[in-house]
Length: 301
Image (cartoon, rainbow, N blue to C red; front, side, top):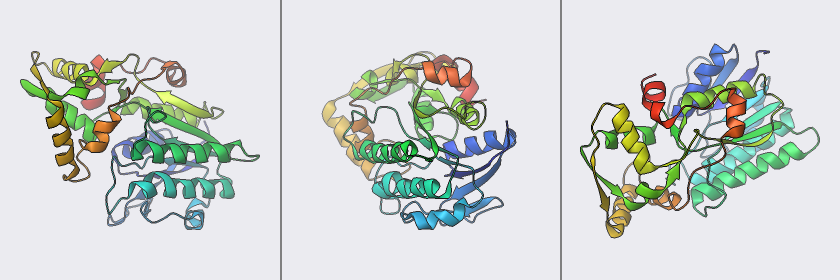
């Protein structure tokens, strides 16, 4: 595998940080993008996804860059991180700049389940995905891959911390959709391993790849599994009435943007977050981490 010069957006985030570490271990040189207000360290530069919505802003940053990985994402809209800019306008500008600069490989971290959802989260993610794939279809376009993971699990993830917090409770009250919505959680380390492969032995891969664990389960079953993996007895589970579920989500809207429970996340539970694991398994060269092994291999490991 030939070492490459790679730009990773959101390199201090949960997913971006894991990717950066894995790529550097594989011998690549990584330029990390950090949010405004955070002093950049060695090998980093500031990238403002709320405002960098024009390709010409990105072109100077792409000098000498052979591959770009976009990991930036938000769950909901906020004044400092407007979802339309963060998910759609800025990534589209970045991808257009990649096409102009002749970047060899672009990897977009999207999300599973967005095709059937009309939420702003899904529609903005979908728009960026479609723009990248359209650029890739042009003669001389970048070799593009859109990774669509189910719930990404690992230490440092806000949703993972929420699930682990729920798993510690001897009596748990769940919003109704959490007991029925199905997911196929994927270890953040497996996702990083797939990205390393896409910049080496799987450089010829193109298009959309669903990134999932081997088998689906409900979110309620996931939390129960995490509890068992942590050595606890089964919890007493109660279902939150629908009216209180909606109220709790609206209250979540008032919380800091880092809190994962809000009206947008409730709406996303209307559709299952599952897919076919076969292409992801082939990319890894082995089965993805089982849901029953996530604590040992993604939380503690």
